[in-house]
Image 1 (cartoon, rainbow, N blue to C red):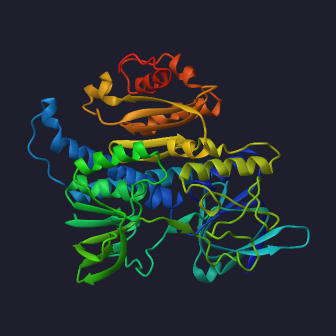
Image 2 (cartoon, helix red, strand yellow):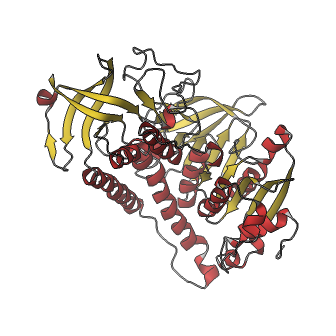
Image 3 (tube, rainbow, N blue to C red):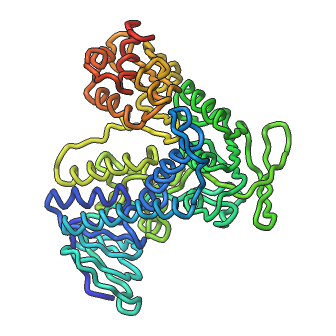
Amino acid sequence: MAEDVCFDLIIVGAGPGGYVAAIRANQLGMKVAVIEKRATLGGVCLNEGCIPSKALLDSSELFALARDKFALHGIGIDPPKLDLAAMMRRKDDVVKKLTDGISYLFKKNGITLYKGSATLKGSETGGMQRVAVKTVWELTHPDGSSQPLSDEGAGLIMLRGKRVLLATGSEAAALPGIPFDGQVVVSAREALSFEKLPEHIVVAGGGFIGLEMGSVWRRLGSQVTVMEMLPQILPGMDHQAADALYKSLRKQGIQFKLGTRITAVRRLGSKAMVQFNPGSGSEELDCDRVLVAVGRRTSFADMGIEEMGMRVDERGRIAVNADYQTSVPGVYAIGDLVPGPMLAHKASEEGIVCVERMAGQHSVVEYDHIPGVCYTWPEAASVGKTEEQLKSDGSVYKTGKFNFASLGRARCMDESEGFVKILAHAENDRILGVHIVGPRASDLISEAVTVMAFGGTARDIALTCHAHPTLSEAVREAALDVHKEALHI
């Protein structure tokens, strides 16, 4: 075992929670080490999730525009031809540039990086935590220089730290009794790297990941069937917004089987036969790929969590207090490992707040103001309460709504589907929730998040001058409609 090294903070995992926490901790004067078992930094989000999926969503959107809409704008072209290999190379290049960017930030901020797997070894006299790094194959020093290490040379390195922060994220959950095989039954990781266009994909799960990946392959020409065991897609979203997106995706050719449970998958050579139950008995459907997107589960196997007696809830999430400290003193956890939505930006916020609280600051994550986005086209974005939640809570509220079909900028873009919906308290006018289905909803939702974070009202948005012609005018019109003062309905 190599001689141990001491740090103020040891972070396990270099995803959006871990790497952001490392940078902020360094800014606060801490000596930081990060342990990452992947060859590249950025975690699932950057390597096989948020970023590559958005790269393919943008590419497939351009392909669909060229095929379906250029003629409407007076642009005549030959039918576009898909070069899937080139599209995948572009996606990989986007990922590489961003992972290289994190490596640069580590060098800039003097963060020591160990590439290997971590196991917690408990505390020693004086409270210092020990973390064993196994099979270290590369060490990057604070000056950015790298030291390759063979398995024989590395063996096991023991690190010592005043605190340890766990940020190892999550992994795709399989369907019960239907394991991933990486070829026919796949997760989003494999669906981001298909070498050829599948003829028919069955998507298990009508959540963000399933709808986004289904959209990519539908735009490129695959037949896509989404099977969701609940009666609506995006079950956590405002029902009116989810229904609008459902209707739009159906118009794009995605087929849906709601209230349907997949019970078995049989391999038929390079294809599969999916057995499912829509509530009226067992049926079968053949396809090329089964993309399983039914959720994610925490990823902390073989890290010594159980041996340390760390408290974990019934869903496999690590229990933490307001400082993100686990039941083990000196050990903290953030992101997908702890309760709350499994979102990259939630993990980043928790990473920042966690290390700031270690430094004595009183930062908090405003969980009621964390936006959620589905990057289909049209996009769907939301923050705060849904109308169904307000009704269930017995809250008194007012509703304002504005359709993009009445907006000049949306008409110019030929993107008139969807709406902005604002829910405000009936007495004090404070915004309780905002739900957007339409073009660039992912960008428009930020205005709502900002106003809500400052305790703002629908009137605050209505009195704010919005540039014309822009998509953001729809947010103002919806705010005006809360008081039935909209000008362009």
